[in-house]
Image (spheres, rainbow, N blue to C red):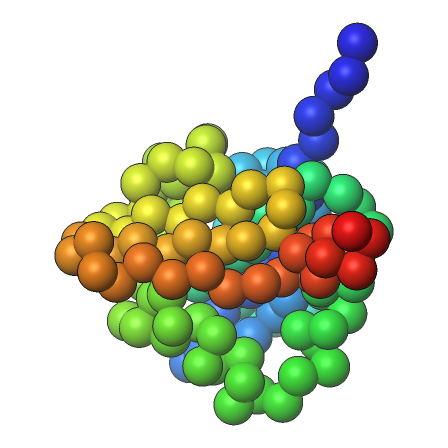
Length: 143
């Protein structure tokens, strides 16, 4: 029997907008760990515990590649990525969104299929766009 896996690359921010990029296979549990603020960790030291962005992947190697790619980006690019889907930097984990990666995200919906296309739909249907991710690049090159 085939088991479908889910991996997440996520960006956390503090209220002063310090950033942390991580990867996990259980976003809800990992966010809980960050919010508990384990002593001595970077996220605890700078109170970085607000989920401001995430992407879903079906393959761990694609998630790792994307995490490395985002960590290499300049801050301006990371901020633009966050503000593209979450312009007010709201804590996305306050929504029940983390329980189901395809659930409503405040007024937006973020859906990622296993081909790696992230669909961001704002309240107006005309605002739907697809942004290729590491999964889509790998799928396209394999075809």
